[in-house]
Amino acid sequence: MPLREFECSDCSRRFEDLVRGGEKPACPACGGRRLRRLLSAFGVGSAPAGRPSGPCGSCGDTRGPGACASD
Image (cartoon, rainbow, N blue to C red; front, side):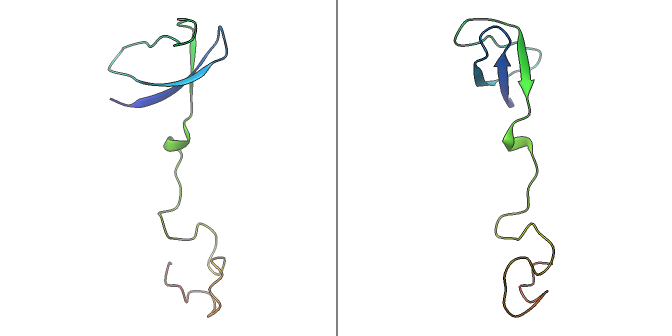
């Protein structure tokens, strides 16, 4: 059951809902069903925790590029 983010086209309210199969949620504020699915921040990729996301040397390790062993 994925957690999805929506914006209601009727009242502009943004909300999250657990969606099962072909189920269509309704806006909790106005009950509207004209919804736009949003790209959630959770769904956007990022660097693994504890590792720099920039190029080598951007982590600030003073021993020089490659010294932090995150490459």
